[in-house]
Structures are given as structure tokens and as C-alpha cells.
Amino acid sequence: MRKKPTSAELAILRVLWSRGPSTVREVHDALPEDNGTGYTTTLKLLQIMGDKGLVTRDATQRAHVYKAKTARDKTQSQLLGDLVDTVFGGSASRLVLHALSTKPSTAAERAEIRRILDAMEKQP
Image 1 (tube, helix red, strand yellow):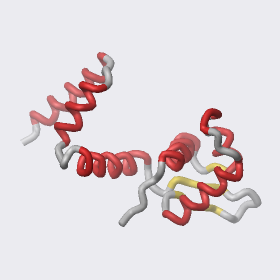
Image 2 (cartoon, rainbow, N blue to C red):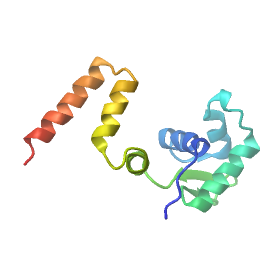
Image 3 (spheres, rainbow, N blue to C red):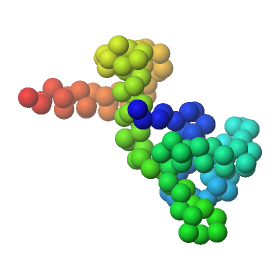
């Protein structure tokens, strides 16, 4: 069974995905200020994430450098798949309908959705 990241771990993963390999200090400094996480908490979370297989650690330098083990898209797909299965009974259409009725979408987002649907309709 794969380990799912917590919301705090996802915040750290977002930093690593955007910055690339980073030290604890770099990750901590890039986290939103309103998260209330101290440096030692960031360090502990990264250590836990290493144990869970979410990040890798390069200990060859004085300051250890952490890197996300899985790409953003793959992690998002796994989490979304879990959400569809557990909350929407495996129905992607129920997820999409609920998402569109809950949060307003921009014209650009709606155009992208139409483009994806049109491309899907053309597939055999």
C-alpha cells in the first residue's frame, strides 16, 4: 500500500516540485508564512516523508538536499484516483459535475475542458 502525503507534506512537495532539490532551510523558507511550521518541524516532516518514500535525501553535502521522489503529475493522478474511488464511487463524471457546480470556473478553464472533451469524442 502506498503512503499518501498529508496536507503538510503536500505543501512541502509543492515546494520541491517548483524549486527542485532543496535543503531543509530552502524548503522551510519557501513554505507559506501562515502555516505556522518551525524549522525543526519542517526537518521532521522531511524525515518522515523519506521514511514514507515521498522524498529522497542526498547526504553527500553538509546540508542534506531533499528531492520529491515522484513527479507532481503522478502524485496528483494517484490522489485524484483515490478521491474518485472513495468519495465518488469510482465515477469521474460525478467528480467533474460536482467540481464544476461547487467552484466557479474561468472562461479559459471551460475552454480547456471543452477542448479535452472534443478530443475524447474524436477517439475511437
